[in-house]
Image 1 (cartoon, rainbow, N blue to C red):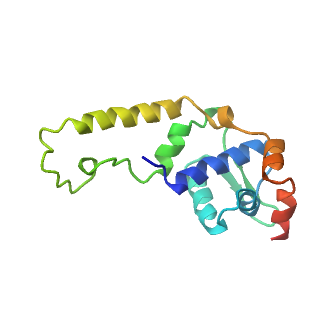
Image 2: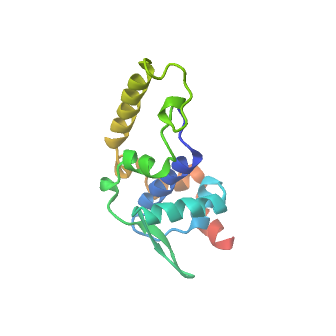
Length: 151
């Protein structure tokens, strides 16, 4: 199983916003920090804003910030909000054509595994995995904010 890039970016955006400690951060700044597509990141930020994880401020001096305390944002909830589906195998999705669907025991095992995966993510929050701004500056090259303003 692999999470989509969308979910990966969503968690990275929330971690970055958490590290900013209430400061508004721009999509340009986040994109420059992670060296990822601004266009794709805009979709992620919009989804996180609609889901209530981010608050967006429009305008020249705008940006995004966490909409609620990082301690209340569970990773499992973020993944549930950003993953399109959890159809690990054909029989989990619509249009199942599997010949052994009536007697197969695999779906029950995979459902338990998926539930265990999500339960583990539910034990962690953005705060529990968060970095500090100085960690980002050190890891990502220091002048990300200045570079993003020049874009």
